[in-house]
Image (cartoon, rainbow, N blue to C red):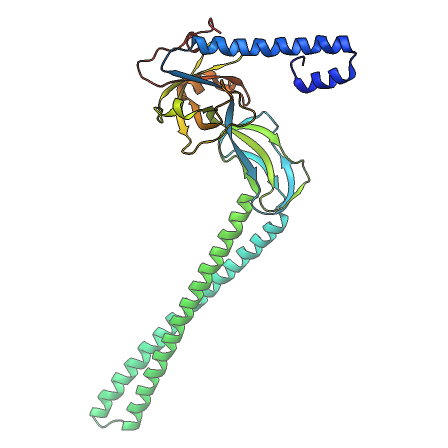
Length: 339
């Protein structure tokens, strides 16, 4: 707290003159100690190595509802480690369940209509076959002058009528089949909504925040949890143009976290294509360097497995990057003895 400039400023304004002088002296000593530490680190870094200060970050994933509704259950707490697909919360789905039951009933009705139309088609096809047989019989009898031409004409008309009935029955079957498919699609759609109202973890990770409480009514896209994806921890550093000119994705790096005895292996995973002004929270070795490039160091997969939950968002430390493959790591990037 003694090194906090805002705290010291409020303290100095209210304090007597002698105490204010002492506070200013302490502040100057603290600043000098920090500058001395930075100078010592800079002196200990060999050629071919660049370094910077940063904080460990994780990719954040928002767990949100897709459909509006009331949250009836919250099954995870802040800090819980969850697996991909694990149920985290439940929305009230009574209304959607009613829609599902209605869609299921419609599907059953469509199935019955399809069966009835198919039976009607079979009956019409039998009637057509009979009409054709009678026509052939009438034609034979006409050749023997046993029936008149009118009888043969009537049999022709009966065949044409039966054929038209078969065509109509076939169309009815097709219509019933389409209705059945539509009903099945409606059931699947409502089932998808029901499934989406059970909120699951999109990835394996750790719950960072629980945004709402049980009973909250959320709109579409309303957040329920904020998760940290532990498979993508990275540190963001900022370097001037001269330092990053030879860097490339995949370059070897080390991260030395405050409070950890050994450094952590990392690689360069991102180099910004455009320079930006130095963010106010970044402390650079020279204040004259106003334009910097953002560089990400990603902790290697092996180190993630080794450290597990020891890696936490916000951990501070220093990142070291090799500009040349033959460059030697500084002591601070090799062990816990040179810091």
